[in-house]
Image (tube, rainbow, N blue to C red; front, top):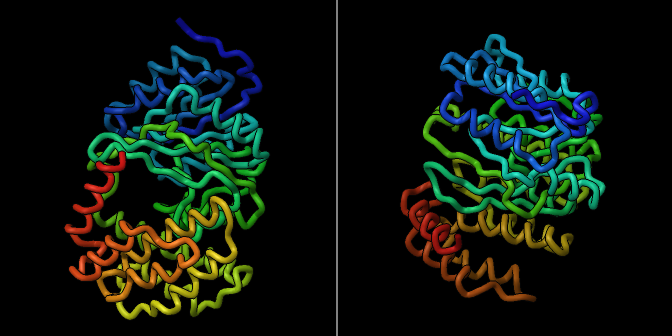
Length: 352
């Protein structure tokens, strides 16, 4: 039986869902959108040249629900597909979805509520991992001010969770120059363009992890491009933070593949400056993100534990954090090593 959507002529939300060879997971992903509590949407599915049988599944689903707009064509790549979906959208809001993830039923409802309360232009959510990896929750900052800080260190949104104001998104397309980290680049440009940003502090999407997601070569390219986006954002906002290029380059070294020769005095200075200019959730983000940097630096810095304590002399650093830093330093455990990954996995299990 064909479902007719209320308000399909003027959908509140346009969902953009790119599909490329997702035959194993696409049906459950689409169904998770169709059962959303908010029903006033169009689901724009672009089959980007799939060769695995995805097309047949999508054609069957499109016949059952008139909210589905199915476009099948030759392969053009993710960025081109995303921009096509955004251009064809008719809703007030544009929501992203990936072909192997599962949206929880109240995802759209909670995002619309958050956007209304915060008067924001873009809203993401937390995600819960499932599949080949841990089932822990990945969290992102909720407030605009905290997101501005999180941008300094990496993407502040889980890409398949975002909902964006269409009028703004159509004027700020994804850039193919940054494919593989096109989302991080877009959030950087959106922030600098004045978009208000928020996240719903709840896991409203199940993010599937599996071995076919990204190759080792692609991961390496993604890391290089992500580092470049991060560097451009630091360059854009450093003057407003009272930082010089020489200062923040030491922070960037800790996020690169080569961490040799990092000037920890400058790292301390930058972190101290960020802490001094941040309050509330933004300060908590500075603390969390900088702690990750100190974990990365621990193997080459014998006094890393005391450095961290000195940054938090007003509210002394917890004993457990200082102990972790001391262990990593004394045993010279590098952040890219199997030992570090093992310890991190144990921490995830102990902390849900």
